[in-house]
Image 1 (cartoon, one colour):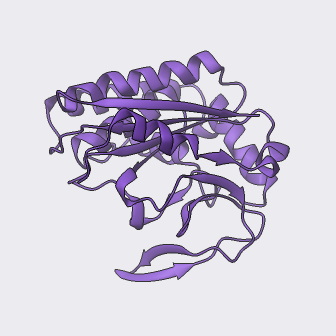
Image 2: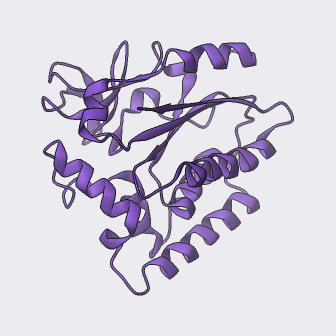
Length: 240
């Protein structure tokens, strides 16, 4: 994998954008992007296991007196999904899907994926993690035309789908990287067991504050920092 200098990470993030049509839909939307290099891949370990267990306990505590869909930030994302025509009871935002899984156990994948899944649940925000070296140009969040290709799989077979016109999607120059804002990522850019350079997208809506969003990013970076002696990161906030 290529070794990226901090200037390269900054330049990659500088090209990222959110289309004004997305902000028209949700003026309160903010995306905090982190480009992280120097990661040494590895299997799930004792530290990632402890972080996942902490996240599972936090999810159980948060839902002890209310259903998952009534947690404040999850409820905001359900509203955002309805605004572009998605049915949140059928296509759940990523943090809702993980929080619902926490009661029976979050997945154990590898230490990089385990860390970002745990941080998503602990801070209650959608958090996407992708292999930056598999990107074709910088990430863009847009309202889809319906023509964009989305490479995915079904029943073990590769296929190309297309988003619904008006759907909020993350794209690069080769097509959709994540459908319905933060619902389903393409296998084309997903993190792998060999990922050394990653892109993380932290999504926020009101009532999440900028301070809470920053705290989630700081927590993520503190855990990623143990994945190699030369881990370095660039960040950029995209807001209206």
